[in-house]
Length: 79
Image (cartoon, rainbow, N blue to C red):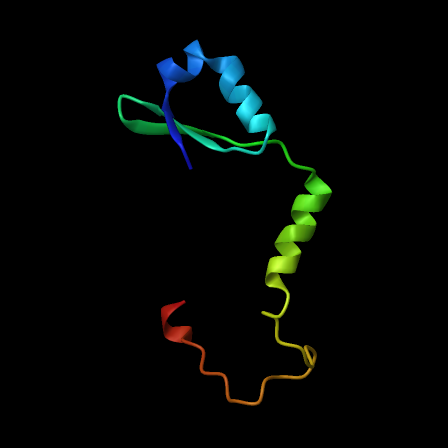
């Protein structure tokens, strides 16, 4: 992700905003420290769908009502 100093960003705002519209993300810095991230707006529904698709295949399918096969050893003394 490209970094840009806040002064440079402020002086060339239209240029950077056009790039953001085209999908480029920027990290804004001030005195060498990261202060903000500028990212293109995304559709909330599409974004939620994409996050769920990343989880596809990572879940365990099976019985969620019956207890697990092994014995449960809770640490009741340290609750």
